[in-house]
Length: 515
Image (cartoon, rainbow, N blue to C red):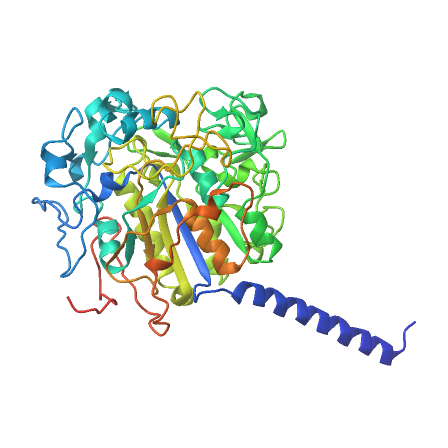
């Protein structure tokens, strides 16, 4: 047996070691290159920039719709000019969709078809190539619907956030294509490395161009037997954050199983969507981390405790969206958070709409602004793809490609070179991008060229994780730093509470800048 003296000595050593580990973990969380200690990425679905901001900051303001009047000195954006509104080269002119018609049909947003709509940069083949005629659920569609846009009487909350914080009007899909390439570019800047290497319309030469599902996910349709399921090699931002001991998580509506059958999770939660039909809350191909063996939670296992949310346990950083709210209510706010709404509130045309999306976005941001951590938090609102909706701007070709799926400039996408893996034609369509934070510039429109992987770069730079490597897009991504003003570190209380239904301000406006 040990003597009492030796026992006390060992206890002191163990206690010191424990304290060192706790302090080290805390330092890993707190050591950032900016005052931002918490990043929350609200990653929504299927909106082009012009679809939501075509006429910003001027709204029509008809009777019966929430009124929007821009603040004095509001900058303009690269939106639709008078000639684009009245003499557009597409089959029909762009047109305003009112609040009563917020529910619209899902448009074609395939990798190849979107390139065809751009027509060598003329941006004039949207109706013929990506317009959706027919039906979508209980909705009736016309191909010309693809030219429709909303203004501040419907997407009122986003216009009000832009008034008080920062937005970017020069941000793009990293590549063309639908949801899966979008979320992969968000978390890794990399759509290559897929197995199997070829699935028509989904994977070309090992590069993801469509919505192949994650095979390492019990809730993917038909399990591992479906032919459009893939797994990805390489690393993502989750791997890099975990390696540095930084807490993080991807929180998605419906991820929590409703049952377990023969050891496999069943994701059966549903809501009635904007098309009048039941829609599953959980959509597997919207969950980018499930494509990687290193970060998947294949069986949708629950976190071992609320205190462990954001840390490595059996949930492997993949959670239900309710877990995020449980965590922050308990004082546990992970450093890097990705939020994905349940299907009916993610903004995807067809089964969701801007008003359902607004309910989720506003309720979430209102809650975040009540936390003590709000003073060092940045919320980034971004989108996975354009849904094919008309936008008048073609971005630069930064990743040329030459595959059977490429038609942007004829039979290719630009002039291919040996530095980029084929199947990554981009930039794709222009998308909305907003930053809501006490450190965001006020009523500011940033013109910096950015893309989805610019969010990845911001997280990498803020926590010093380094780059993904290879030909991942983070290495060439533009910066988000121009949307922030870190010189005013004492201004930690700027908030804007909005009504989730109307999108209009409620209560006192904590942004007291004079108009």
